[in-house]
View 1 (tube, rainbow, N blue to C red):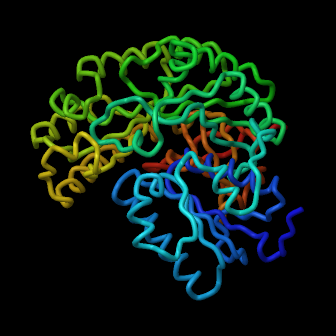
View 2 (view 1 turned 135 degrees about the horizontal axis):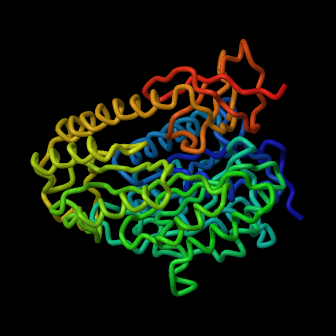
Length: 439
């Protein structure tokens, strides 16, 4: 029988990067707690003597943040405020051999698929009976659910397959079980995530099964909102849109990163789709689901992107008017196809192009928000912050999209509740509303 002191039993988990990493941390925390560890998540003043850093290695900025975080905790270890430092996740998967030499203060390094080994290092066992169960770190009313791992796409700029491996789908039954367990704990909104959600099912069912997955999840009692992220545009499964229309609890929302619009850049990016087909797909999505909120991601500064390519992209963004849009600057990643191409644009020019697009999107967002004044939207309350209760509409995902603000001096609202919000005023990324309360 293992015996640990109270001091040895405390672990602080630090999560960097995307929502997919957050899910990995939540699974790890569930396993640690099942092994009788006391675990906190990103607690600033934690008294924990063991720290686990779950890293991101996607682009330069994320890698720099991960390395700096490891160095910060290495210093704490040198000072004696922590006893053990463990690093896991994407950065560790990709650069472990180099990092071991550079940061010897770290006690152990683990990749993205090595949770059992990490647990063993701490004298813990991997609990197979926890399959489908996890403790969430998000507010109780929403959670991310990873429907697959890895990616088979050949995108020139992306290092995800190097860190996460080939695409592996979870069976529909397992995902539904996870959803039911989360709903039992008060969950109301489920956000489906993957490196490529539209590829879901090919590896285990022989065909794309996103529509079938949505159909099954929509019938889980108590699940009010289901939201789909990271839908790859090439070979998009159109039957998923029909299911979206069929069920009120599937949000009329889609995160579909197109990355670019000109044919030369899309070809260089190895996206497997042309400008014409991209535009046809986006217009068809809006035709089939008329009130859908479309979010996309754009990558600027890819090797070979000319000023002409960028101007064409600018005109497309102005014309199509995505509801939500994020912009990344190209990062020259070792062992990717694009790394063989000359990275000729300066960091300053890449950032300039990103800033131009975000300024355009800011004005588009303002126009779309002002058009909502006087209208009523179903809104979920996320939190209270200062003098405001803050919520989101069906067209808004946590952390990345717009928010709805209610004056806390006038109204009392409860986290996790749905309210009907009448929009009173709007800014570029916020809506100010009053709740329509029952008599």
